[in-house]
Amino acid sequence: MTETSPILPFGLWPSPVTGSFLAHRLRLDDVQWSGDGEHLIWLEGRPNGQGVLVTTTPGGARRDLTTEQWVRGGVGYGGGEFTTWKDQIVFAEKQGRLYRCGLHHQAPQPLTPAFGYAAAPAISPDGQWVVYVWTDHQTDLLALVDLKGNLWPIKLIQGADFYMQPTWHPSGQMLAWVEWYHPNMPWEATWLKIGTLEGNPPQLKREEILAGDGQVTVTHPQFSPDGRFLTYITNQGDWDQLILLDLETHQRRVLVEGEGVLLRYPAWVQGMRSVGWSPGGQRVYYLRNYGGQATLWWVEVPSGHAHLVETSPYTWLAQLAVSPSREEVAVLASAPDTPDRILRWDGESWHIVAHSDSEHLPPFYLARPQPLTWQAEDGLTVHAWYYPPTHPQVRGEGRPPAIVNVHGGPTSVAYVRYNPEIAYFTSRGYAWVELNYRGSSGFGRTYQSALNGKWGVSDVEDAVALAQRLDEEGLADGQRLVIRGGSAGGYTVLNVLARYPECYRAGICLYGVSNLFTLAMETHKFESRYTDGLVGPLPQAAQAYRERSPIYYADQIKRPLAVFQGAEDRVVPPNQSETIVEALRRRGVPCIYRLYPGEGHGFRKAETLSDYLQTVEAFLKEHVLFSA
Image (cartoon, rainbow, N blue to C red):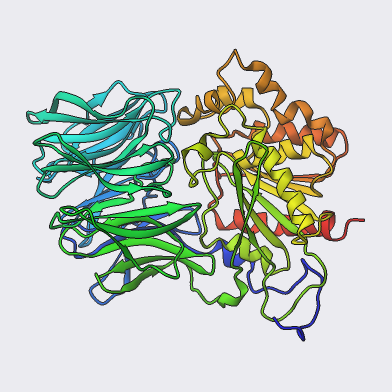
């Protein structure tokens, strides 16, 4: 764009970023090495919503390893879909069963019966057993099944409310895992345990707590290749530490001091990985992140010296996988102007293994964010990312309309990564702003905990303050601001529209919470006690639940609202959206409602994404661009 570029109204710029383009791209969800370290296997999300395991042929062509099954972890929000051993792969299927397949055209075979749901499988070093997290949505435990699927699964470890990250010791005679209990979430307090196994099939004979006291989070246990050491991540004050535990002497050493950074993301799903040992046991690779951006490092175990691996231009990294046979790693990576990719580092340079889309979209249609900060009344610095309208051929005049996005969670963060929905709107002349309100992760434990007892208050204040800042600094037209959010972000959208009806011109709510009482009573097990910390335990905090539930103040909402909901959402059921829609329609407030069959908490199908974008764009034209 230059000063001689034609001027067109903001929001009406021609754009190559179409709804079909967004709806038919691939999702890259995980990547791991084969057991021999020679091949990469990754999980793709296809436009029909199906998860598929993929690898490459010797000639470099992509090859699907699964076709009929829908690969998806079934515990909580998912994740932990597969694991490998030699040329074997064990994966979780959407309907709950574990399957085994091979790299060399071995068709998937079921290992477990169709009862309950599975995630986070881990194969024993001798290849005989698979330990995994199992749930029936009431009881969670660690179960065991043989790799051939000849025996009925057995209950190995139970008693905690939740489990994740089961990890075998190289001897096959010990197992480490992470567990936690209501009302904690896994980023608040967990315990790391180790157990001794005996017998055939193995049974737990002894267990002990290695770390955790009810006040800290302990995650990511990883045994060294020789079995002498165990690394894990815990927090010390605001920031994380990578601890090295000598299993022979029981001495602990801080291997990495994460001063000013974090070493993990909140464990919203199973199977998250941000640490990995090198095959020789002399290095530990790890991810450092702050404010939604990440870098890759490795530390020398004997000396503790840390080294940065250059990953520019990528700003987001996840699912670190270290080869078990050589000094190579693989990660998921992207940047605001670089679509998601799977990368392999050979010790000297990076190689692209897979793309999330065709990448035919020129990067100059993709906005780069600018940081925004301001001080809240409690003294904390609040964070946001501003994505300006971006187009190589046209320009606008004056201030643009802006979409303020409130991320879900609420214990999450707006990652600085590729998001085609941002490109869809910024290439049409909208500004897009990501709000990392108080309570977001990625800025230290104090900032993350700032929402405790204040959900529905602090997040709302930050959304209002951001609108004022955008107007005062001339970054957006204060009369054409739109607030958007999904899940917990949708809850903030509804509260802002009810409490500050003149602040935003319109709202976009995706599967948002309208009634905290209903949320606490009807949501899935994983989050069923989440509001104990965010608002307060019931019945003691009943008054706060009522005061912060948008449904009780729906008569104060004046601005147009577009609501989108998955019909099969177990986290925020459709009644949360339908009650607010009914309340607005009774009063004649403009309100659009889309209920998508076959969709859950988050939209996956191509036809859903396409309809959603077309509906939002038409809604914005009618109620923001062309409204008097």
